[in-house]
Image 1 (tube, rainbow, N blue to C red):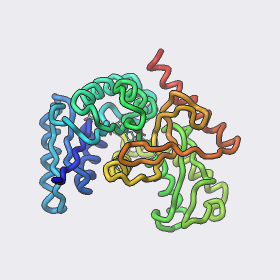
Image 2 (image 1 turned 90 degrees about the vertical axis):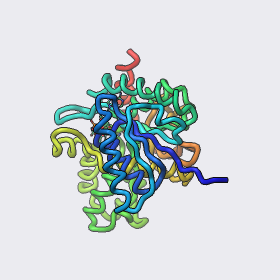
Image 3 (image 1 turned 120 degrees about the vertical axis):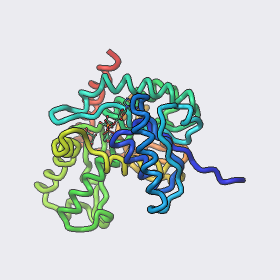
Image 4 (image 1 turned 90 degrees about the horizontal axis):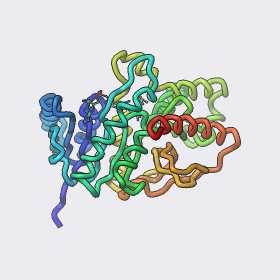
Length: 313
Ligand SMILES: NC(=O)C1=CN([C@@H]2O[C@H](COP(=O)(O)OP(=O)(O)OC[C@H]3O[C@@H](n4cnc5c(N)ncnc54)[C@H](O)[C@@H]3O)[C@@H](O)[C@H]2O)C=CC1
Ligand SMILES: O=C([O-])CC(=O)C(=O)O
């Protein structure tokens, strides 16, 4: 059988979309189609061409094109949605809900029309509610619509822990449950450095400070950038999830998954530990939680449901 390259479409060619496209190509995960609105067609083509012209130097053979025409995305193996608006200092992610829900509906209709068998990963905020919106609009089975939050939130947590201990980030594992907001639930009990529980290595007050900084990790970058939100770490997080799917790696990664009874919640997209492989979300891993942890998760779920009510009401 001839080897066929994977085709990955990235919708939204802004900061996160363009960075994701470049990282996907650098890792040769497939050929990339970068899509934005017709008014941004030339800059989108320009970004794609600029990335392609880096390929001889960087040594990758992925093709990258820019377009506003969804016909170019036909039969994508994976579609990543980063389209919409980002927050500015003083805004919460939830302030984006109405504008971005309209964008989700518009782009999802086009994606489904041209790639009815694809899998969709969603980055656009507020991401738990936006992933639900894409699921509802697409009519796809739940395992083929996945949201990104936990890889990024965990990456921030791992960065801060590694700085605190002055050890390699590679040796630190973390665990963040819940919605992608200030109520997210970093689970210290399931977090380690070199296999050693963090509670044995870091005093509780320092751990509390790391958890607090992780919860506000997005806002910390928003306030520093001044005119947008984070994009390098979010793109890297999407690419890790994309790789797990495209290579059927069956990685255990936190992801926003559709829940039907898991953790006691129904009809909800929420950040939970999952197995991501060639079918998309292949399993939601359920953990025993302490009463305090479950209460924290309930609070996070309340916040996600409030945003969803804005859309449904
Ligand atoms: N879930 C997460 O962990 C993260 C989520 N985000 C979210 O990702 C989204 C994108 O962020 P950035 O790339 O920084 O924003 P950006 O403003 O740089 O790029 C967004 C792009 O979407 C395009 N767009 C708008 N409507 C469109 C449509 N109907 N079809 C195609 N393209 C359309 C815009 O023209 C723009 O180029 C934001 O909502 C942001 O909050 C960002 C970082 C992390
Ligand atoms: O904070 C934002 O608006 C973007 C985002 O979700 C993050 O960086 O975690």
